[in-house]
Image (cartoon, rainbow, N blue to C red; front, side, top):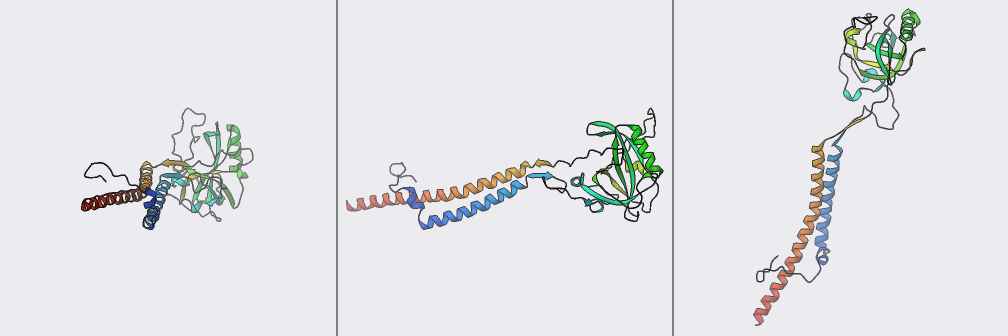
Length: 282
């Protein structure tokens, strides 16, 4: 405060800390710290919401556990973005004669061919159909030989359980009329397979592909690494978090400012009282 007579600020004789350590001001400090802690907690919560992680149901550094495919995606429905690349188990039976070659497949930087099959899911093969990429080969002849052998009865019979990653179905492409075999498929697309596959007990089809973790003899496993978590930063939430931090600091500063004002007011009142007393004495 300002002294009206001299327009100069009165400098208290007693130090500020003597005012701030009084029980009243210590109690107010405790209240200010509680409020500041609450604001800081809100800021931390807001900051945690500022980072969005696209991790397909996993925690970095934790071993993956396969999930039944029917628990992750439903037939005819699109797969959730967070579930693309999830490790799943699929149980069913191979549909004879529905093995084929998919060309122009890149496997860890090398271009080659896939061998894909038609899995009728369910122990009794009465579930939805699922397209499975079984393995990869750098040689077209090898891929076609394995395909012919499996179509001729070399595929495992009975119930099989496959483990692999599910990915989005691919868009169909028109055949290349200039290719040696214009009917060779270049994408694993359910939209195209539905016109090629044999009928099964269920008319439903999963709208995803399964990349098998294990490959048949003669083929290499398809390179399908665990997807990396994608993180994005929400700057609006970061701004809100900073606001809470400012509020927390202001709560303590407000206590300090009130204490300092009381300290200065006491000094001015003392000077005023002494001045009044002096005038009365004179």
